[in-house]
Image 1 (cartoon, helix red, strand yellow):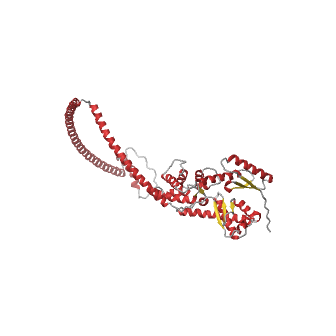
Image 2 (image 1 turned 60 degrees about the horizontal axis):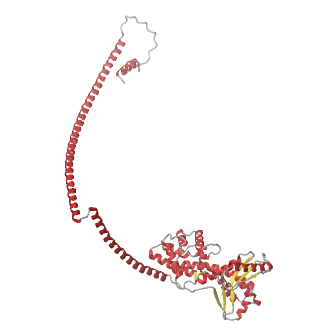
Image 3 (image 1 turned 135 degrees about the vertical axis):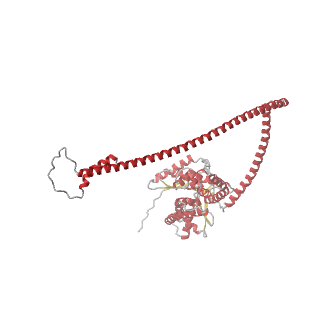
Length: 511
């Protein structure tokens, strides 16, 4: 608040302060008008004196404050002058240092420039000397510089070429010798590790009989038992050899079902058409369970566990499937052991090789679809979500596709070792199986055929007709149509082929 504001406020509040705290006087009559010559009262004189005192005090206070402000301003100005002096001294000092450094730099630059000139002169002198020496050498050798360089380079290259050739030749000889020895060791060790007992099985099963009279019971009255047995099982029964009953069929699973069925019938003693069909159906179901057990046994033999049940069931079919006369279950066990050993030796993924070797031929036992066994196997494994690396090995084990991994190559090698070793396969057997299958497929391609079996080494095709779809005349026509189709499609089959069509109805009643 300024001095004049405070002075005005004091003057305006002075009467109020006088009257504060005193009892209010009784209302008086308005005073009479003063005349111009009236004298001031004592009360107004007191008020003016007080105001003058206050004014003096305020003036003194204002002077004191003004003096303090001036003193502080003088002190600040003096301090700022001192700081400015210090800054000026510092700036002068730094400037002196910079000038000194610039002088040193200029001196150094002059020294460097003089040294460069000296070096340049020395280089020029060296080049001139070198040129003179080269000219002297050229005169002495009668060769130019470029020609001499070329000769030196050629001589060096020739010497290096001989050295390199000797090194390469030596390394190749050493590598070949070591590789040959190592590969023989690997293959011998792998084959030794994968060696399995092997018994060739082809198309015949033998059942020994103690008494020749049993054969008469097998034949039955007017041959009805043996006809029913052959029709139901699809195998050919030969009773000519003494002491044995020979079952012949190219389909190993069908032959095995017939063998077990006949053994159960002989043990039971009740051999009649209805009993034959009943035992056959039961044995067929039991064999499916047996094949599952064989699949599990094969998996456990190579230490593979937790495969899907359909995959295990399919592997169980290997027991009754042959490839070029080689048992599939034996071949798979042998090949897997070889692959595992090779994978350990070369540092490949053993688990992938193990599983791929086990499943590589699974397409060979898939009979309800068309395609190569590689295509069928890949499709089957994809359906059951097997690892992609395993599927790739299966797809590439016959080089249908380029090898994508070391594991694929090892599966291919293991399969080749097991399949090509002496005595492993009998190629004519596979051709025989193919011809027999072709005859059955031709017969099954006609409408009204319930089932068809190629017997007597393919010399007879026995066809079971559906009586609801064909009558007797239709069965006769069917036999002729199948015969003509076989003549047209089967060109290189030796001898004659007999087509037998059986059409019969059976009625049963149970109380």
